[in-house]
Amino acid sequence: MENNCDPEEYYMNSIEYITAKILCQFSEEEKKHMKCILTVTFLTGILSYFLLMVDGYVCPDVLIEGQYYYFSEDWALANGRWATRYLNLLIGHNVVMPSIVVLLYCLFLSISTFLITKIFHINKTIHLVLISAFMIASPVVIWQLTYTYMALCYVVAFLGSVSYCFLVRKKGKICWLSGILLLAISLGLYQSYLGAAALLILLITIYDLLQGKSIKEAGIQLFQYGITGA
Image: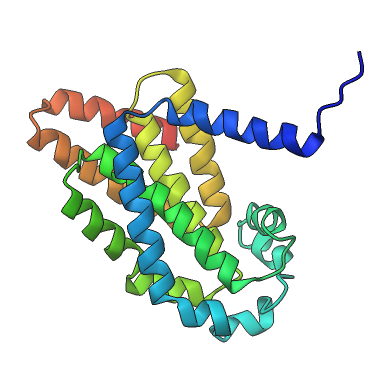
């Protein structure tokens, strides 16, 4: 039978279906939290980095690694950042576009922020607003965005580390394997975010102990993090 479905319409319907399936996994309260975090992150990010989006001011390293087009993937590979070439190729075919970088940075950081608030059960709107604003308008982010060609590698590496901590905390082999894969990609983008994962694990352990988890249970979870991380 001949299929007269418009390919573009089919693609859009597929995206809508997948998005709907993902959103169904969250409660109404969690959806409100996501909207709050996304709104605050994007508003704060655009207001903070509008000049960067327009003028594209950069640090000196950009001049030798890719101000308009990223061409230093072999150097990144020599430093162990094997995933950098694939991320930059996937997003814009290595073309460095400051406005797109800032917007995608806000998106990926929003997801990381949401996962962190889920881990620590942060539900108050004022806390979500403050955390979202502080996360996107911080000295670290300001510095990272001047490395425009690498900024998305930084934020996706951070997201990978946060996702690893979030998934391994859950039960099930699929969650663990997914967490291990995301941590591996994180290390392939920028190795320093192993430290972010380690710090988050420490904070999770302290939080669990304060919430009444026994030392034995906390120790078993640390062991799980150690095995999966290794």
